Length: 191
Image (cartoon, rainbow, N blue to C red; front, side):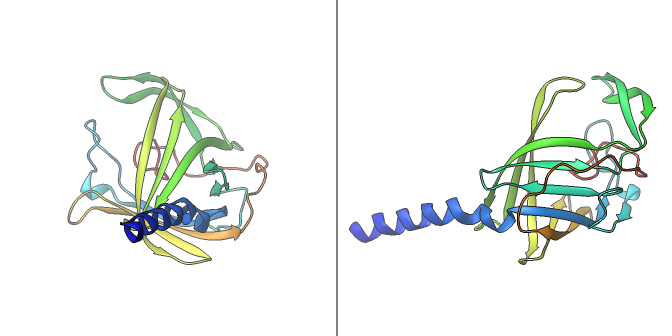
């Protein structure tokens, strides 16, 4: 009985430390994602791929993971923001051009090493207040890079390739120019 309790305590302590592999600033090298239909299902023929310089703060996506299990997603690759959200069709009425914009989304996170899954919860306040939890399967994690996958089905898998920029969280970036349209989809593909 004592051995079982010690094993449970060790396991619980290890899970508390699992998130430490992510602490620091990560830059996106490439994302591959699908657009989604009105029901939120991926459209198989819509695969898009974007490649970035992970160190470029003027045109890219950075994830900052802090030791207290909070963080920020800094997306400087947005060139427009949707307004006039229609909840029935889940689309925007208009898009406003926004060059030189950095969208910062704050999140909380945890990592389950046994399941190789990173959980990120982002609270959005526009067009209405809600929280969304992203479950990302980590298919490869090293000290300097990781790949996450989001599998919708047999042949529909989104991927993001990230490279560690710094082992310590960085401060917010300056205003850069942007290229990629902001579309509904996965964590890095849109909201």
